[in-house]
Image 1 (tube, rainbow, N blue to C red):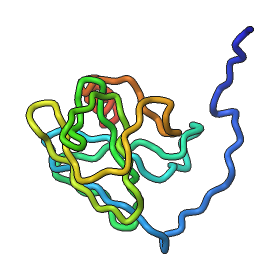
Image 2: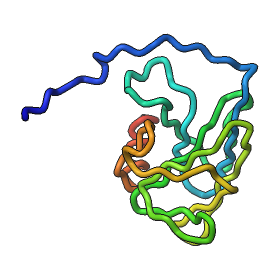
Image 3: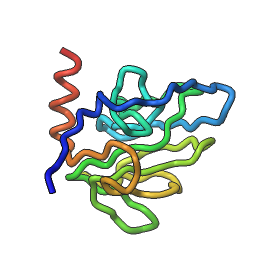
Image 4: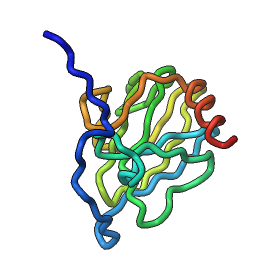
Length: 145
């Protein structure tokens, strides 16, 4: 079998509209670290994923009526879920109407309210890269130059 390469920008994506009257989730970053959150599909992103990743600065909250679906746990971090630490890379998902806060539990462990699932790469149609927190910082720094 020969792998057929596909540039994901070549795939067709159905038109979408944002229904602001519908439900939405909200995240507060109560950590001292930059956090990647998953939100509405950005019109300039040509990936096949259902959500787009966004940067949320420490101490900030995602905007009202902007549907935050969850957050990313880097490869060298973990998240405390139901009293057990789960190592990244992971996507932590929240259902609509959920307003949640992400905190630190120790040096490299995140903690949040009762979530609706944790997903490893390819278990959900979200971008879950195998990146350390330091690699995320490097990429974020290059975006602000």
